[in-house]
Amino acid sequence: MPNLIQIYLARHGETKWNLEQRIQGQLDSDLTQLGHRQAEKLAHQLAKLKVSHIFSSPLGRAKSTAHICREINQTELTISDALQERHFGQWQQQTLSSLKSQVHFEQVFHQISDFSAPQGETGITAAKRFKQGLTELINLAADQDKSHHKAYAVISHGDVMRCFLANINNSNKLNSTGKTQNAYSLFKNGKLIKLHFDRHNQMFTLC
Image 1 (cartoon, rainbow, N blue to C red):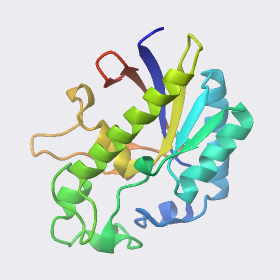
Image 2 (image 1 turned 180 degrees about the vertical axis):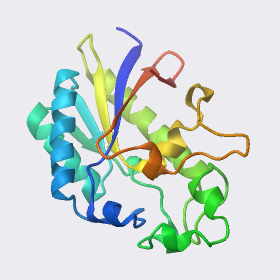
Image 3 (image 1 turned 120 degrees about the horizontal axis):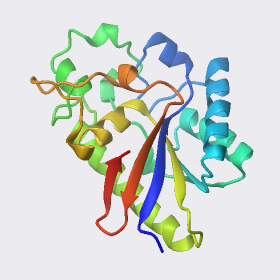
């Protein structure tokens, strides 16, 4: 049985709050018409890649995207709290532009650090939670999957993806000040990112 598993990580379709650049975190807003089209396009991409299992965040925007993907692909779908967006505490529901004067804004949105929004989750904690949960999900699915070709999709959210991907292959797009782009700039809605997961060493690598 091969140790290398293909993982396709994708951000959910566009939402109403995405249009406003309003921080959703673990709150939610509905997919827009464009968001539904992005989900359908993503589903057809996953069909060509022969994805056999979809993992999704439980938040409505990700789950709606995942259900569209499942309907078109006729695949299994697993919902996991570990894949939900980073919690932004008191900053949730606020616009990104309105928060720029807040203390630790840069550390929260442009770095992966121990800083968080008030009553929120740090980037380091979010990345650890996501990685641990995804690793467990993949291992469980792979144990049950008897096919030679193993390819799974993950529907999640921009900032937790940013935090998770930051240290993979040591290619985190950090500049000399330790900053990254924010999630809006890094990950377009419905965009696919291909990873490999090596079951032998339990490591993810970017393709």
